[in-house]
Image (cartoon, rainbow, N blue to C red; front, side, top):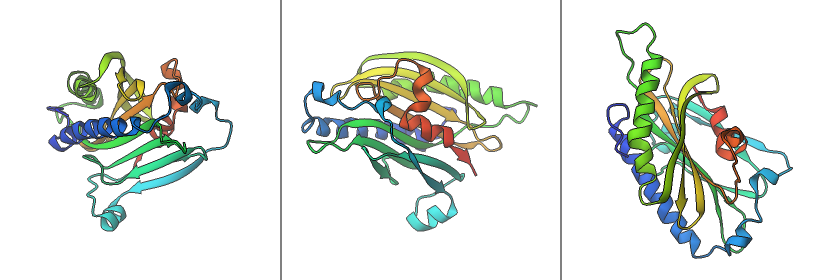
Length: 238
């Protein structure tokens, strides 16, 4: 994506590639999907079973093992449940890692959500006693003017729902919520979250796409109950 001033060129390119990769994967997936009526039989919020959490740490050990540079270490927990398939991509088209969730459907996978962690840089003003508000305003501007338009490029019915400051595991962050329609998967929710590192410019940016057919979100208060919402709540810098 073309995120200027705040995000690095690598993050910019990675997010654009991620959007293209998602579109291509969903187009291929649509060829084997059941009818729209059948796709509605899965409802993320109707699940009554227990979640298990798998912890992922991205640090020097991760770099040594997979040869993927980590500028600033972080960790997160990914929810696991028996009716959802997790596809973890440690070398996505840009960024650090992408988790994709799909139904375990014998007639063909159906996209539920994905959660993509991407390198970003949020400069720390040296002439301010309280630089975080300045960083958050710059991040919000980047989300609205660059990240969102690039994320929904090629899709229809795109609209920004809200932009606000949120807390991610005790850290100040900025979130943009939007929506669009994907030709393969129908109505989608887009959550973009910038999480400035409290003490470093090097940080991360989250791209979270959600299928409303399988995750019938009625408002932002339900986001923490989504699979990506659970990952986001666990995100921490180490």
